[in-house]
Length: 175
Image (cartoon, rainbow, N blue to C red; front, side, top):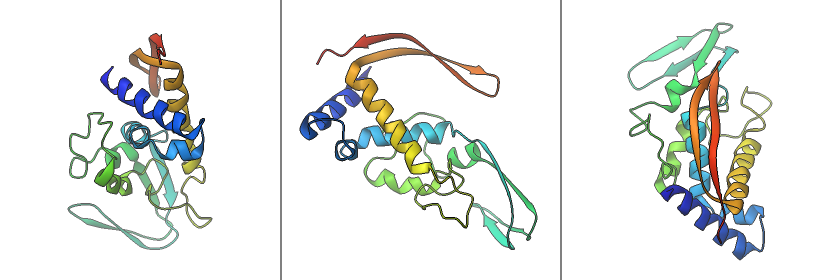
């Protein structure tokens, strides 16, 4: 409920100031942006990714480097990168403020779109060309939800290969 209250306050103030839900209003919502990125970090929509190396490349982590030769298959499991404890403090915990202020620098370690979040996709890579649209739609969904409701309760579970989320209750907006 405390996070819901903060989100509702930020959203309603920005929308009121802008005279409606606009891109300018959405850009004035750092908490909403951080919550969406944290959600994508915690549960990337595409967890498994693979590609064929177009040239010899060296992939490095904190401790080692690995040569991947041209035409070899590269496989990535995104939650390993997006929950790296050497990058993200308490990586298994949802932190709604993780990407606010200096925390935005951590976006270079968010790889949910098959590439660094801070890099724009090109025709020469495998990064999702709709990555910015997905983030915008996520932010818009949060905005629209908190314009209508003050708080909610959820039940989380697993469903086949993904997550199952059930709304248990919602409370209509009071302001």
